[in-house]
Image (tube, rainbow, N blue to C red):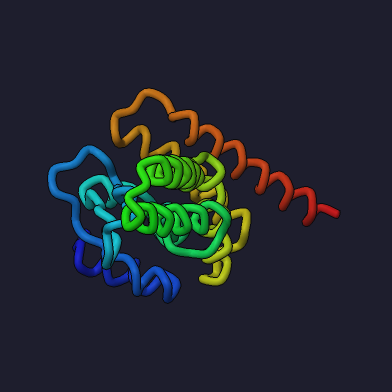
Amino acid sequence: MNPDLEIQRLRELLPASGRMRTVIRPARQTRRMIDAPFPKPWQWGDRTISINFNQWAQLPEPERDLLVLRTVSWLVGIQWFKPDLYQSLAAAATGGILFELIQQDAVGILVSGGLGAIALRQIWQQYRSPEREVDADTAAIQIAQRRGYDLDTAAGSLLSAIKTVAQLEGRSSLSYVELLRCQNLKAQRNLQSATTSR
């Protein structure tokens, strides 16, 4: 497999937001087939997806497509600066800390800092939750459907890819989050089957 041609093909598969915000690169000496570091709030610019093309070539094209769509959906879904409750609290706490620093009020600094820490911890946990992983799978399937896949094929390809990747990476079992994702994908396929059989 030619990595440059595969990267070009995968980039054409991505939605516009994924093309703008992510970079796909060949992995350097890694055991993971596809890897995307968790983006930190202070990291600006493109988000990188690394692919081990030696292992990648062993997957059928639909599984490769769904894996990259799922990874991009997960990365693009992490938005540190969007208005919601906890991000508003974090911003207010930052403003409070600055105000209290000017006032030289140690208690106010501690209170604002504590509020900010709680808000940041909630944001961090929200983005690292299993629900976020399941949401990324659902988003990838929706994008795949716009690219010509039907729901059953897309969900089945992603389900198969999760299991195959674990085997190719030399893992004896799936993680808790992977098992949860597999269960959700099976449920989506069963729901689709039940709907079409009516």
